[in-house]
Image 1 (cartoon, rainbow, N blue to C red):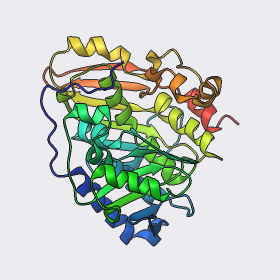
Image 2 (cartoon, helix red, strand yellow):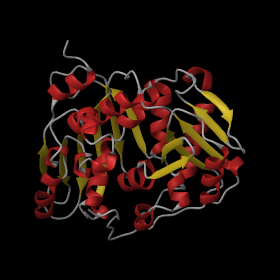
Image 3 (cartoon, rainbow, N blue to C red):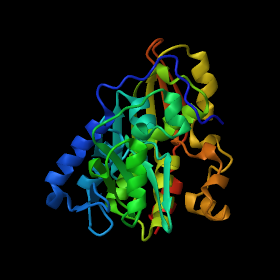
Image 4 (cartoon, one colour):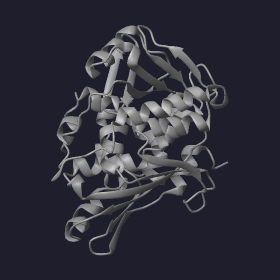
Length: 330
């Protein structure tokens, strides 16, 4: 599958993505005690926002993390369940800038490692660095005065990681803002589950769909109970999207291409569909690269063609697997 985006017209941001994400970080800092986060100085300079590693964090911190990931180009909220038979709070995401918010910002495409430290980087710092093939294919880049990113990890980054990010983004370390939470935390779980739309847009990239046809998008995915550890958290948060997410995307153009590509988008198009992610992951010896990449998609997708007024629905929700994954069967 392709790792580059197809665009018939360039992406144009309303303003610098990093500026928008930095403002969200500023608000989070101002409400640090209320959001139960820790504000610290990164080794070598910059600002570190601990949203669940050495502090409880919470829902407010998780919502802020998700907004930072999407450069504040999406509304993110907690709403009632949309999955039949599953009474769980649901993370709702709505955006009028799906390609920018998801592919130029939210997608966790920057692997950061140094010694025993490893984290996947999300947020608009990716657009500032411009190192990924996906970012380069979008044709979007920016040179902000401050850079903001989000890490999914359980320890503070070492100075070499801070320097690596700052250098790649063309800033001094003092101008860097990093926020983080582990998967097995309230904030960490929420920011991962807020990726329902992102998984759909990334699947469209892999299927070489013209992202210029995207207009708006909405997504819903159930928020799982916080897992006992990060590995279990990876299973639950993935299942939330693979078996419980519904994404609606408004697009333009013809219906024939939508009917052709539609069945290939949802998670049930994958050979690995049908078991809890923890089971699948274990079978592949915990190697993400051995899991069928086609699995990482929402359970259900609706393509609404605003050019013709027709809607096309694909995929299926699996509340039975969600209950099993979330430990709700007893």
